[in-house]
Image: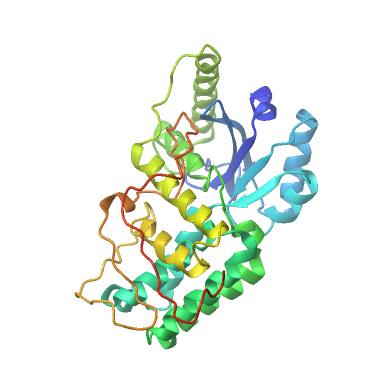
Length: 354
């Protein structure tokens, strides 16, 4: 599988905990997966005794010894701090991108930590502000701070900044400043999450059949997954279809995002208007359990920035990723797609944050 790893333009790196064996002692099972011909293949399994920068440097030094020419165009990981300097040093020409799903998941957990779930459920404008935060990574990295400023403006003009200020401060301090917008932004990325890896983890866990298996059961399961991956490579190279095409709703979703981004680039939308349009795709994020539909019928108040509800079921997606683990084609949506309704924000003070 080394040849597949070297040939791949995208690598996805993610850790799992349930599948690691009971012995030897380990902190996680780290899996490196390669996207090749529209399919994801596990190419490296590593039992990690530590999640430190030193441990990751040792792992990637070993991988580079096996595959000296390895230089992927893109690597997608979660936001573990130890990854960042290692990937930067080992793969200096590679674009390191964080996972949008993990970003959304972290924001939702912090929303619960702050005790804001009930407030957001019962307040339409608060719900919209939270969704706008979730889609900040769709913006170019140099516009994300402007986007957060615009969101604070919306919260202020709708009289809910006091309640949401701790959450917005968390987004700013943790994600914009400490982690950094370059890593968080998934602007125009073909693959916005590493949910590919989550699917691979589930397949391995299903194969093992138990949490914290014995070491021999673990080794047998790993061998089976690698044999299956090798057979899939043969099928791909033989031009035999192995996965279904992308779902139409994901193609429509990408078309909408691209359309709004093009309007932003042309000055036809402000950053604020883009976020209000894009927040509708964050209604339901698989795995985040974002069940924040308003429990009380609250109509948008006639504030200077009016937030309008959009009831287009096609705007509701099951996954923030632009591709699923079973996608086989990287079909790009047309910017001319007009499916659904755009939501606009009316800013009387001019085109702020453009």
